[in-house]
Structures are given as structure tokens and as C-alpha cells.
Length: 350
Ligand SMILES: CC(=O)N[C@H](C=O)[C@@H](O)[C@H](O)[C@H](O)COP(=O)(O)O
Image (cartoon, rainbow, N blue to C red; front, top):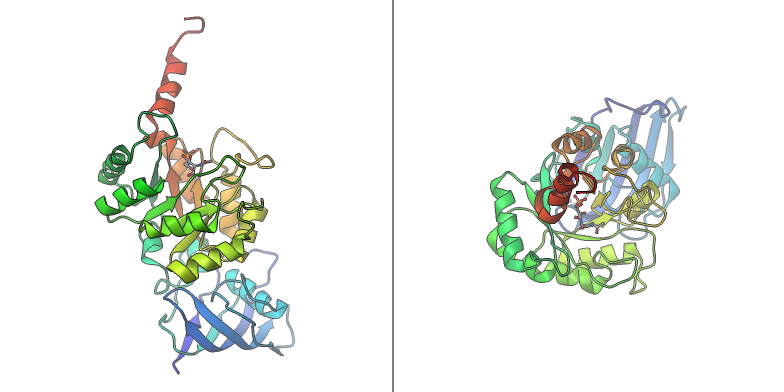
């Protein structure tokens, strides 16, 4: 058994409503890392000593039933355990002791409020580390369009890679296979299918097929709407993790969906669907308020995606706390870009 201590740096930007803990420790026992990033944990005890938990008290926590991601409040089954992790996510847990065979090592990370919440650089998946603070380009053409062709999309992906894209997001199994074979960059894969409301990688079967193309991250619909195969998001994420080891990006449309997606175990949350569900905010530009809210409150990376049309908006998304920014239309969809220009140039009535 290894005995590893995680140290979390105190928050630089502690939300004012939470008095930072003077000391808090979370003892985990029987930690089993299934992969670099995931762990099954049983809580032994949680100890708090802070302005809010005075006098210091030791609270025994019943063992967690089932897996828990270290650093998340996601699947903790017990309120106290969840609160401990929530406090960790807020940066107020200063010390956590993990006992068990562990591959991750010491954490010293307080660079910014998103990175503070991400588990550890050692445990951060390489595909995520490679896009951190960078641009991902979505290369997609729509049914019936002239560029709807895997070879063309692969060329587009190579072109944006040459321009500095740190990652690619793409749609459709054949597009993904071609792009995977041609490029070494992190690949976010999805499969748009069906004519229902839920169309971004709508079922587990779709997700498994996307994973089989070699995509590093499988993007799925992460909204609260029922999925065509009747599975919950949590069941889908769990199955993708267990059967493929791939990361899951949940495309959401609201703050509540982002929180629920993280709790369901999604590794990454994207604001992709904001404005594209009946109940979310449509707007001409990116939903930076959503980006900022989720980046502030989630312990997982938040990717800004959707209607980022200018370099300034992309920079603003990073400023708002986005872990990475995905831009599609403004870079890879010439029909729309042309229309933007044509509409401005063409005189009314011409
Ligand atoms: C809503 C939906 O179906 N979004 C899709 C998701 O993969 C794509 O059609 C978008 O192009 C992508 O999200 C990037 O966004 P934008 O093209 O706005 O930069």
C-alpha cells in the first residue's frame, strides 16, 4: 500500500460566501486507481477545522458504496463525503490523505481557478493537458453540403492544425477515422444522428462507435432530455469509461445541466448546446455567462463552444475561465462565413 498525501494550495480567489478552512483533511482508504484519472475510493474519515466548523470535529464517514472520482463530488454517495469534496473543489480543503496504491503524486496547483479544481497535472489526461488554454477547431459539414466528405474534412483538419489548432472536434465515424489517421492532435469525436431533440452522440452505441474510431474524447449530448436508448447520462458515461477508457465531454445548454453532467461523471463539460435547446438562451455570440458560471463552480474542465465567431470572443471565453475554446463555423464553414460578408456588402434591394 502506498501512502500518498495530496496537498491543495489555498485558494487565491475563494468565493466570499465560503470562509476558507484553516485545516481540513480527508482521509481515504482503499484507493484503487483504475486508470491514471479514475479511482475507486472508500472514505475513512473526514476532518474539518475552520471558521465554519468550529470547534474542529472529526466526522466518521461510512464507506462509499461504489466508485468515486477523486477531486469530484460527483458520485460520492454520502452527504458528508460530498461536502468534503465540494470544499476541495472550492479550494478550501488544504490537505487530503490518500492511502492506497496510487499513481498520482503531490499536487501544488493554484495557478487559476479552473486549474485549481482539476485533479492533478499527473492525473490530467494528456488529451486534456494538450488543449489547456488553447484553441480546438471543429471541422464539420452538414448533410447535403459540398464539403460533407471525409477526405475534405480531413484536409480541413490538417489545414487548421497547420494554423495552430491544438485539437480537433469532428463528426461522423469516417471523418473521425480519417482525421485520427492523419493527425496526432487530441480529437473530440461525436456522431450526429437521428431526428429527435437529442442528436449529438445520442446513445451508448453511438458513443462506443465514436470511441472505436480512436477519438480521445467522446462528445455526447449532456442535456437533461431523455436519451433515445433510455439510458441516463451517468449510465452512458460509466459504460464509456469502463468499456473504452475514453474521456467523455458532455455538451450542455444550461448551468444546471453542466452541474448535473459533472455529477454524472463527465470528464469535460462544453457549453455547446446553449441556445440550441427549447429552454436555453439563444444569442448572437457565445454564452460567456454560462462559461463563467460553470468554470467557477465545476471541478472539471469547461470548454467554451458555440457561436465563438471572433478571436476577441475566443480570448474572452478564456478570460471567463474556459479551459479551452472550440470554434467551428467561423473557421471551417465557408458557406456561413461567405453569407456574413455577402449580407454586409450587398445593398438592400440589390
Ligand atoms: C449545436 C450543434 O449542433 N453544434 C455542433 C456540435 O458539434 C456543431 O454544429 C458546431 O459547429 C460546433 O458546436 C461549434 O460551434 P460553432 O460552429 O458555433 O463555432
